[in-house]
Length: 498
Image (tube, rainbow, N blue to C red):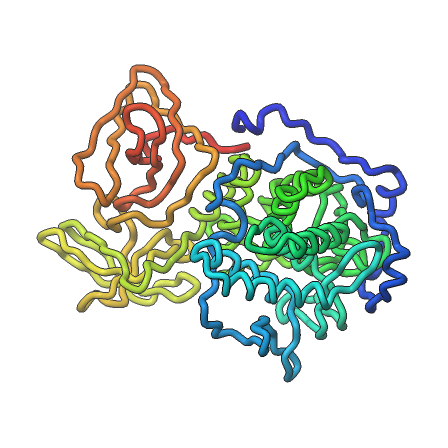
């Protein structure tokens, strides 16, 4: 447990006995559009929807710009996706185009990221077009704004996830917080319009303050008193999908809204969300394999595994807690990103005998051959992948060895350069153990001889990045005489996060 996490007390965040009782009851959530008069007569919620567990997580507000939500996913100027004449992202279902709140919200956020990078007002206009469409199509209920899916939907894999339009998703509600809050803080938007986006953010946030005692709803509490923001809410209590990625995206929205509004209820919901995600990480993880998409069905997913890694890292940055960085590390070790890019990676096989393999998708060996080398030889590899039940392997692409796999074994078979990098904030701690000579390396792009570091007693050091460097797991040190150098994790004591 890090110093940041030490001393946290777990407790129930109370919102009054009546609200807590309401949060445990069932109810539907589909609702038609309300009139403006009816919506105006419904007061906005002013407290939490029910009691839920919290762990003392805070929303860090000193997060560097590049580590804040939705900074890395950008939009191209030419939109190759489906969109209408206004440039608003659309979705095809049942033979025609529909508005899709998550698709439009995410595209708006990607355009905002492009606007930050380029300063081009074109991207800001297109981001606003997405936001304005979502706002215009809102449904008003329970003193809040809900953003409807206007088409029927049944999940092809997850049984029980089936909806008749209109229906609502906690993922859309949470991501709307990010889009509206970011626009409300964007100085390129006229002040009067920023005020309108602030109102939209407030109304979207209100949807996370109403429980599942009646519809519509996207927030509920489980049998262990943990808070969930449901991507796929289902009326009967305890039967929702408990989808991890949609919940984490919504948590990013809570951070964005708190950073904009300083509303303490948003930080309390952020705390509850992170407490839930930490408690259920053992359910999300599938050791040595792909992580699970949801708690209910526990189906591994190749697409969402890297999404889980990325979101856990972001939650670590936004909370200042290394717990979520440690969770991301475990998922990275379970199944690292397999692609080595369009150009591939450079692999050296040392002199000696190597066994080459071919596998089925399930990891069964279909063929082997021996490769005898009298001297080291370099190859290009297109993939570095975990073969089910058989460790990490490189897929070679050169000559007679093309389409054969070879097991990663340092130094006999190693990948050059830096891969699978993970940045940490705050820096994490490792220990140089007394009397252990640790061979530190410069960056792969710097031509410098390794240096050996030995301390007479156990000495803590800090690191802010971890990666596969020259075929070994290494961390980049941030303090002492070796600041900026890389040290192999195998030679350090690496405390985990509790």
